[in-house]
Image (tube, rainbow, N blue to C red):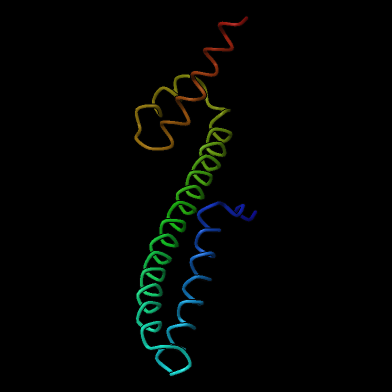
Length: 120
């Protein structure tokens, strides 16, 4: 499943385009096809857009990795809860004391059983 293209990723590609255009104009300015002052101005524009592109790309990558990790954690928790579903309440109460996903899954099952028992 691919991630949808978000506004941050669009911004990264816009900044890449700006950086490329600024680099072309920088080369033209220092190569003699445009005034040298144009080369200096667009060198600064290129450097600023390049650094901003890197910063935004890294932030986008981190956000996508955090979202992927959250999805993977939720999937693992669901699978673990499905595995523990057949355990009796005493065994689940022992597992609730364990740290991590095992305790969390056992707690979810016990709360669901208590909720279902209250509805009957």
